[in-house]
Length: 333
Ligand code: WQD
Image (cartoon, rainbow, N blue to C red):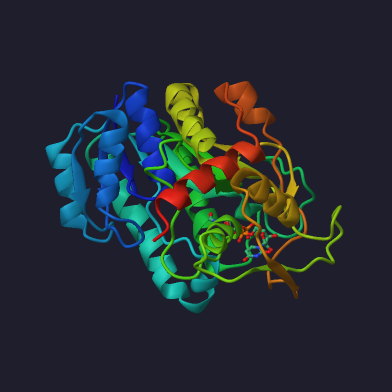
């Protein structure tokens, strides 16, 4: 099977490329490199020893996008490409709706035109909103609190409606919890430009001295140690979940959501302490007021992915911290 991976040079996309190549899939990568680098393509080739077509292309460039379908036989698509910073989406909603929604609609139009009906979508636990109680199950009511999350929810709805209208589509909606960690080679990992929004990239920059200390956003939540609880999942477990979704995709009946998490919650301080154990580096931190929009506790019920995809996460928080540390000390800049 030949799989088009949009956003394939990104953090989760690149790890999924490695997983698919290792599982015998052919891949074609498309990325506009707005939040990644062309150098990642070479790193994927170094890790796997395999070459594959890659295109620098923006989803909004319909002609350029169509060239990929003209030049390659595509059997399935995994769609990672999209803007994904929560805070930025609040400041620039129109950019997020245009890029994420119009870009995805271009992709779906091209899939229809070229007879491609297998689709794996990079969704997010953010669609569970503020009103559900963890552990989250796929049938819970969905809501969002920021434009980024709303684009994810809207795309899920677009795909669900498309599957109702055209029965030959097979769509897996993969709802990620908190991806962290890196491939054991240390060649690929999460290394956002500038000041990271997310916890682990921030800790990594503190660990290599690029930032002075971590700000812990609130220690007065109703959680065991008062800090926010999340379901951190190793990015390689997440990548394996995509391979499983492709393996089972033809048995799906229309669009179906799956939680990809570990089912375990870890607090901010749990992560800090695990990272200190893994790295031997002290992570200084200061407790600050809560961050607007944060919920206290978020973790997955992954029963459906286990039963229907035959997938479950296997890496521990210590594994994730070990691999994150291995990556950042090899790529401090
Ligand atoms: C985790 C915990 C913070 C930074 C977001 C998006 C979600 C997905 C993953 C894309 C929280 C605390 C964080 C810091 C801190 N992204 N924290 N200091 O908010 O759970 O999820 O990223 O799909 O859609 O919503 O992840 O890593 O930002 O925060 O104390 O400098 O760490 O309060 O409890 P989050 P996060």
